[in-house]
Amino acid sequence: MPEDFLMAHNIYRCMHGVPAVTWSIPVAESAQDWASRLSSMSHSHSYSIKPPAGPAGENLAIGHVSYAAAVQAWYEEVDCCNWPGCQTGSCKVGHFTAMIWEGVTEIGCGHNQLSNIHVCRYRSGDTLTGDTPNMEGHYEEQVHQALRSFDECRAEYLGNPAPVPQIPGETCVSPGSLDRCEKCLFDNQCADGRFCCPYMKKCVAHSNDPCSLPVAQCNSPCSQQLMDMDACSCGNDLFPHFWQLPTCNAAPPLAPATPAPAPTLAPATLAPAPTPAPATAAPGPTPNSECNSFRVPPGFGRISGPWSGDCRGTNYPDKCYFTFIAKDVDDKYIAGLQDGGHFKMVKFDAQGNSLGGKYYRGQPPDDAGAMVTKFDGAKGVGSKYVFNKGDGFCVPSAAPAPAPAPGPTPNSECNNFRVPPGFGRLSGPWSGDCRRTNYPDKCYFTFIAKDVDGKYIAGVQDGRHFKMVKFDAAGDNQAGTGKYCRGCTPEDAAAMVAAYGSANAGPGSRYIFIKGDGFCVPSALGLL
Image 1 (tube, one colour):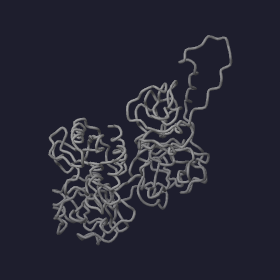
Image 2: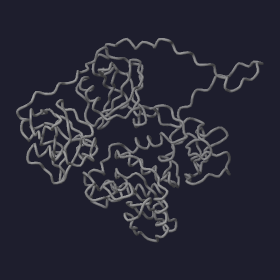
Image 3: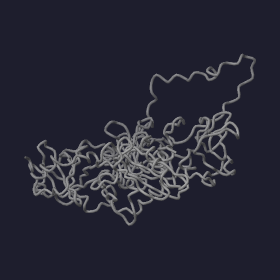
């Protein structure tokens, strides 16, 4: 049960960009104790429970056929949310907000089998703080709209379950890698001498080999090795999407050995030693004239990796193939493609070796120079995006790579407390609707001040909160400088500097400054 509840919660939390939670035995024991008392739905005084089991938020559900079904019902309240913050909605939303509250660090759940009531508790620490779920005044900082798809997060979660070995950059189970009673989809995932039980969907040695709960509870057609697992009729809602990953493509069979009377060698010596790597690295490909443009030639390369969605499989849709290329200032290369509302980028070297990925929300850059700039400020995902070179792979000899832009010349319009139109906007995980591509008016900064450290502060009023973030003369966001205060809208630049000094620093890097076409900086404004 802990594994099932954790998996369901952490996949939904991943979708909203908040950290995974861990299982707490004291919280679970307390939740089970309460569940065992219930014949009908009734909340406990969970916020008053003493450590280590509390204080905690609490969700209840009745009548659901599985743990996953209960968690899904809580999550579906997301459709009712009023953003930002989802403090209110067109239906109850408190179950959903407790599930994805950013400050929650651990959960524990229980189940009354007689009344079929599920209880989950959500805890963040030993005292009540803004990190405790559903605390008044903290919804906007703690509850964020979804950034990623269910499929992306499910693949990421299932892609790292010990002890299943993984092929680098992919999300699949190696053939023959699963031991006794590990979850499986097909026989070929189980180690030698075992098969995937068609009812339990766990690796067993024989039909009477017992495994502990949970089991998939599938009917006999699921014993077919090549069928679509979505067609199975199973009692456990976790199967197949929360259950296990597909099998990796098996390695080609070894060529049969030539019969010989030589003694049988020990297994460790069967394979010849690998061919030594050449002393000199292979040179990069000769620059191709087709690569000396922003758009790449056909068959250049594609994206894969745990966060690449449909591009993890073997039949790659068109959206998996890179369409843009740029040469960065470090002499490495950046490949890019548009996937829905995200522009995804992966860095690679002249030999086509993948070096890590990034993404941003928005439209493709206008040219190679803009792509280099976008890559520098994009959100890093590391090896979760992988570059795979194709038959048409090439590298540009000198695609545009801009030098760092100098700070703009002070603009007379910026020597006022109020900024000119198009100056810049707010973004980041705590910026609510401002993380989208269609930015409402409240996303655009309206005030500016120069601080005593020579950096600048941009500010905007959003409801009851005055939100601020720092940037430099070139318009570069200063990481970790986001702050907010309530009821503190400043009257002038000096007051804004003072307000920033005493404001709540909780947002940190969750507020980001994005400069606009009307960006400028004041020459001397607001210094105290």
